[in-house]
Image 1: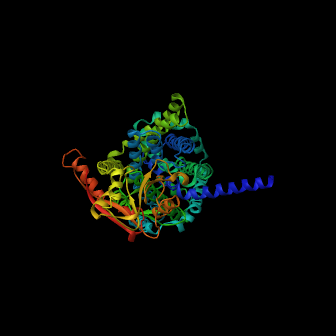
Image 2: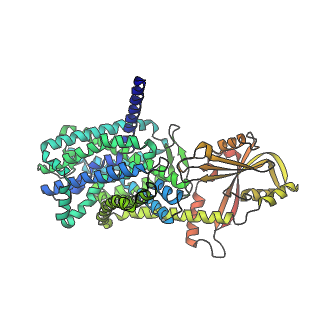
Image 3: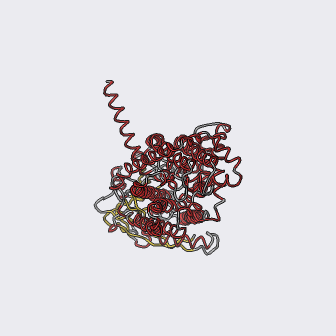
Amino acid sequence: MAESGDRARGGANRRLATMGVAALGVVFGDIGTSPLYTFKTVLDFAGPRPEPAMVLGALSLIVWTLIVVTTIKYVNVAMRIDNDGEGGVIALMTLLGVKRHRRPIIIAAGLFGAALIYGDGAITPAISVLSALEGVEQVAPALTAYVLPAATLVLLLLFAVQPQGTARIGRAFGPIMLLWFGVMAALGLWGIAQHPAALWALNPVYGLRFLASGGLNGFLVLGGVFLCVTGAEALYADMGHFGAGPIRVAWSGVVFPSLLLNYAGQAALALDGAPIDGNIFYRLCPTPLLTPLIALATVATVIASQSIITGAFSMTRQAIQLGWLPRLVIKQTSAEGYGQIYVGAVNWLLMIVTLGLTLGFGKSDNLAAAYGIAVSLTMLMTTVLLFIAMREIWGWNALAAGALAGLFLVVDGGFFAANMAKALQGGYVPLLLASAVYGVMWIWHRGSIALHESAIADLTPTATFIATLDSGAVARVPGSAVFLTRAKNDTPPVLAWHVRKNRALHQYVLALTLTVVSTPRVAAGERLTIERVADHYWRAEARYGFMEQPDIPALVAECKAGGAEIDLADVTYYVGHETIVPREDGKGLALWQEEIFAAMARNAARISDYLRLPCDHVVEIGREIEI
């Protein structure tokens, strides 16, 4: 018995370790490549010969930022508050703003936080790849002119291969990142050996003293220090892919020690009087090994960029399911995992913006000015949501929740204020991008509500419709018809319109409503409810989580198994196709909002394509709707 228990524990530990390594390739790419540019950006405030107090103070701030923001706030607090296993600002928003209570302010804050992630997500690939390739300047200064074209080519290829999926090469991401973290730790140890006094920075007094005596320059340094945790939000957002356990193991056992050692190594070189021009990260490496390190760093930044792109795809699907973005064609690139998806519109828009930023800013130093402001505001919003969660979910009193959230608020607020100083130097870029994304979300949601209200404003009562069928005025033809509808009561508009215009109806009819709930997934036993409306006429409602993709043919088969009279060999699907026009009485949406919504609706993926209905069994019924 004891042996079997030991074997079970050993197997569980191996699975945890395996998942932890896999998480290195997906979750920690962004934060794991931040040493390429963080300390370099901080030293730019110090001039060519930084004072020891400044170096130790900056290192102390970086270390304690990693501890407070990443280890305490995200790994040990946020990851204990999940929406049925899912984390991230959208999952937290649906948990607090939709699932428990209807709170428009929380929903608005959560959506703007998600939009901000898109804004910084376009910068991450650009600054990461540029920082990696800028190492060639220390190998061969003559190659400096080729850094920008090479970075552009790498990014172009990265986005170009997205339609093929990353399932095959994705298996190698974890081991490669494990190698990357091991190399960073080794380089850091070598640097610390040159000047062990750098370890004094583990004392937070050095950081606080630097902030107190550094004046405006000491405050502005926070904008550079913050770059060390820009990937912390990803730890929370990716929790649903791996679970909290593997992410905590990977952070505590590999990532945090590696980052700590590498940042201390870079600081040790600066304390030892080594030249800090160029990228101090690469000065940790012996000259003969620089080229392999640059190659490894480039691969690591590509993996980090891939994680950002995959995260953007996943967040887009969640927003579409929740009704905050127009329908887009989502391609499943692998049967191995639900997260292996491709959203073409997001990919190409992200590519255009990322390449534009790369070419427009030219160097990682310039991009650093634009980086961080959006994600620091997202972290502020997450802190507010965590405070509400502590009170409502954990049941903490206001004093305890306020003390912990207050600590996070002071830290996040300081970083946001320091980053705002960079607004005119490029920080406005992610804010503009986020505002545009939020505007799209807001208008689409308002338009969708107006569309739904208009569509159900004049429904035919079920009794009236059944009486029409029983009167014999409607011919019944062989086969089965499935009408997809938003209406949960009375007669679906698309069904009533079909009968009114064609004066015929299939022998067997199923009205099917799809409802997306505020949880990531719905248990199989709670998914489907079926009711018999009349002879050969059934109504069903299928509930899906915002992380799930409906399978309509499978649902229809499940309805038949539940008693609905459906001939699965002869099913025709009927869906509505609305043309949006403004209301003539002027009581609808503002004209500019209606025009934008109508344009998005015209260009959205057809509902039949989005739901992957069999194209040769679909009838679209067009009608004009005023909003």
